[in-house]
Image: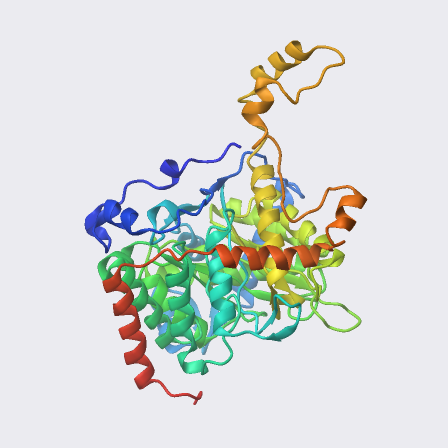
Length: 520
């Protein structure tokens, strides 16, 4: 399939840097050896939707925006850091010399290793590498009975379990759905605990306050070791610029915690194109690029050389209603443009794969998802977020959608891995063996390759009408819910060491004693 081996994406980590008795000790403690794909190393070319001159035009216009208009940084420490760096500061408005800005951006490494608590699940981000990450932030779920309701902690735990079991997902994300029954000031503790307990893949941090970011780092330190997490990436966090051109105090506080600990952030403007950007795909990209570059540059004031991810979330709004739209051609085109800019800057970059506006796991969801994932793969995205579960413009996470997305990711993984030629000689020998009017079902080549020769989904149905009808005439959404239910029934926890598990629970209990039940 043209993908890296586990050994290639998982160089030996000195045991002294990690909690838990070294690699051998950790391996002995793992239950359920769930299959997991290594980092996807793309073996197909990227698609350039515009010539280099057009990319350069957008780049120069973005720099002009930052020089002439500037960007708001609504945080006293951030303003002091920009002033010290030589930027033109007026109040909270920062205007940037383009040479200084691009010098800071150039300090970000082109690739980095994202370490998992199970080292065999560690992945590489940047370059020709891509990883798939589940969705984030849904207040609602579409459950196993196809009801739409508020998410719970049990739902969140289920989605972390499904992410762990899905071989083509490389991360457990974190807030796949909000556990709405838990008070907001304490919610982050249970979100991170679930991600660490129910999966041994990389995860994502909390950014809604400085204290919550610090709690995330403390919990990561319990699992990985405090010294280790100060220098080695173990989680990714999302920070959104408020388009147009505002980085607010909450996001900047999170940046300061994570970047100073060498943890990568996604610097991603949240743009509703036509509402918070010009009603122009190219104009929106120029603005969003400026916003992202300003955020990336700020992280390098905090810790030069820290790994970061250039990002964007760009959807057009329906000009009749103002509602965000998911899988539109413009969203795909803007993705290609952002990919070209990321390559120009040699930055790892994030986009979204299966973010759709459809309310159900239906034909519209499939159309939208295909439009966006095709663009994400061909644009060369490194961190493909919202790759499982997303419905209703992010307001809901669906069990059926999660399961069917995970199955589709296996196909996209194979697609992007390129066309294999390893068995070509043997295949040609089989042609000579069978000759005219024969069949290949009993040849040695078929026996050797039938299990992996072609993508073989289990949720999609290719049976005859009669067999499909005899088995209950189930639609795709129903089969997806059944798949999710069966996966959860088969789940086995990748257990933490007993001492680490107890330390996490003790930390949560102590923090909950100090935190209020309501937001001030």
